[in-house]
Length: 336
Image (cartoon, rainbow, N blue to C red; front, side):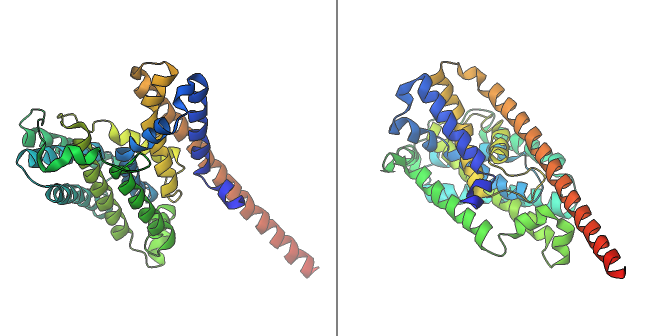
């Protein structure tokens, strides 16, 4: 119980409960199973994006190109559907697109040493331009091939959609990989101390490259879900989603400096970020407040994270000084 209470994600869990409780107090009609489970079903895309970028943030890097990667994958999904292609072809295509973009980002950041914010910002512009090219500058719409739309609305059990059920399985697998496998723990180790990781035989380059490839692949799958859910893909699809995914991770206790956090926090943060628009409706505020609230939350969370990091560094420094002073005192007493 003590270890659970000390976990960084527990604050996001409490925050989610408080959000639901406050909304229920304002409008009691919200506190129904259907309304609450809809918040989780609607978080599918954000959960996939948050899990993917969590791998990158854990290594101490960032990726602001996942929004455009989602948009390109969604556009390709729509074009394949219009051509009569099946769902397996769509999934393979978006995975390859996402993994390739992630591979390029990984090479630029881990191999060439370009700051991740700068490199992925450039990648974001390139991929956004590719969306214009493949869609011919128009919205990709009127696609129903391969049963894409009907599959997205299927409920598996207890009003949980097939997409969110699959996302839960992916989340569990990612969480077990990061927490239970040797190579999965490399992401945290590299983010905590890259030089120390190199000294003990952990390849920082390979770890960061894998993190970016996974991040891109998850963004590609999120693009498939986007096209399936909305039935049309505008050229601006995915714009701003990267900030929501980053905010979800930080809200879930994943440190932007790397080395701290887990997938539980990322998944909880994604539900919170995805629920804001829905909760505003119940509270009585227009959805135009969505971006403002998201931005304020991100700023507050980042400031709190920075203060927490500074406090932990100061406490570690004090412990070292106290231990050093105690050791010198013991040596002086023994000589006397």
